[in-house]
Each structure stands twice: as structure tokens, then as C-alpha cells.
Image (cartoon, rainbow, N blue to C red; front, side, top):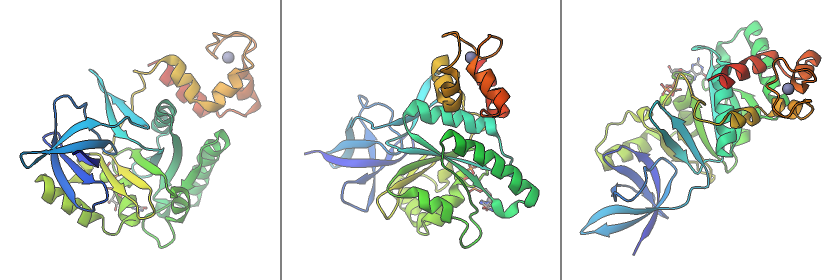
Length: 290
Ligand SMILES: Nc1nc2c(ncn2[C@@H]2O[C@H](COP(=O)(O)OP(=O)(O)OP(=O)(O)O)[C@@H](O)[C@H]2O)c(=O)[nH]1
Ligand SMILES: [Mg+2]
Ligand SMILES: [Zn+2]
């Protein structure tokens, strides 16, 4: 008889699973025929001579992928949103945010822009952040400014969570794990349970990790990255991932317009009007050239 389970984390040598309807975390190995498993995957398992084996992967509702030089690999599955976290320090990197916006578009999931560590910002920095957040809002992305240190600093994020499955992504040190700590005061207990079951150390931020939220949603922690390459994506995917550019491009005179030198370009027109932000366009050109 097979048992359904959720993949909490994949440690390569084994996976940590939560069996359906049970709180306990168990360790399992996947059959060779099962594709690479990631946090969030739903799987079927069977006991084989007292050992738990993953025998099948259920179809994924969504998958976030990441490319390195050699291949494209899944990073997390069955997410409904990317939570794109930035903070200063280490610094707000809008190119990285845009790369993740394209990734969300590619994965068919929503994106939420999160600026963390607001408690560290002076008035001038707050103003600058607000301008950037307003641009993302005008494109259609919800955007929140939070901090994990003050009592009510998390409230704007709490309002966005309701029943969704967020994968937190962003540079190292922006506060992804701190956000999850605030959402789940028993986080260390859960991490400890996974360590105890799998025998792997408790330094969980080196792996992607699925945390069920009490109200039915979930939040997924992932290791920090410096870059999220979109080079493996078709140029068309990058273009359509810039929603406001794609909208402005509908009025370009030429169907194959590159939005750089052509006459009658809707994007150039929108830039001149100020309805498309110059820095978003500059980021787009950088990504389109990859
Ligand atoms: N002042 C301030 N510091 C914060 C805030 N959130 C996180 N930090 C600090 O920032 C540092 C990095 O936080 P982490 O949560 O480990 O960052 P991360 O994004 O998980 O980093 P990686 O796991 O390396 O990707 C820690 O020292 C936190 O205490 C915040 O809202 N305000
Ligand atoms: Mg972390
Ligand atoms: Zn154009």
C-alpha cells in the first residue's frame, strides 16, 4: 500500500518526508526511477523490508527552476508565489529582483516584493525604497516593507500569506530565515526533528526547506544567491516576464521590435512618458543580452 507524503527537504543522500496526516518527520530514499525531488514535492512511498522508499512523484502544480552552467534543476515545487526578499545591508539589487520576477512568470506563480530591515533605514533611504516599491506595485506586484525586529514589523507580510505557498528567495543575508523564524516560533524544533530523522546537520539554509504554516499555507526557505540566471529562458519568456514592457510593446509598429532603435516603439514611448521606469528597462536590456 502506498502512502502519500510531502518532501520537506532533500539532502541528496536521503529525503526528509512528512507523511500525510502525521506530524512526524521520517527519512526515506528514492528509487532510481524517481526524478530529482525538491522541497514541496508530493510523493508516494512504500515500506520495503522496513525501509521507506519513494516510488513515485506526483505531478507538480508548479516548479521553480534554477540553471547552472550545465543543466536546469528544480529548486522548489508546488509553490503559489515567490517572495522576493531584499534588504540593505547587503543592498537592494533590482536586477536580481527582476530576474526573480521573470522566474515567477516562467513558473506561472505570483510574486511578492519584500523589502526587509526597514528598522535600519533613515528617512532618505525609506523614501528611496518606497519609490522602488511603488514601481513594482504599479506593474501589478504586491510589495511590502517589513522588519523582523520590531513588534508589528511583520504585519504587512502577514496580510499577504493567507493560505499561499511562498518560496522565499533573495541574496544571502537579506533575512529569509529570520522572516520564517518570526512566522514560526517553533522553527528550531522542526529543524531539529528533520536533523534527528535524517542524521543531517541542522544548518538548514544550505538546503531548500518546506515549512507548513498553521493556517494551511506554507513557506519555503532557500539558500541565498547572488544571481539568478535567466540565460536558459527563451528571449520571449524574458520579454513577457516584464509585464509593463510587454503591455507597452503591444503598440510597437514592428512585431519583432527590440525596443531599442526602431521607430514607432511603444516601449520607447512609455519611457518618454514616464509610465515605464528607466531602471526596469535598463535591467531588461541587461537580461535580454544574456
Ligand atoms: N536590523 C535587522 N536585522 C535583520 C532583520 N532581519 C534579519 N536581520 C539580520 O540579518 C542577518 C541575516 O539574516 P538571515 O535570516 O540569516 O538571512 P538569510 O536571507 O536567511 O541568509 P542566507 O541563509 O545566507 O541566504 C542576521 O544577522 C539577522 O539577525 C531586520 O528586519 N532588521
Ligand atoms: Mg537563511
Ligand atoms: Zn518596441
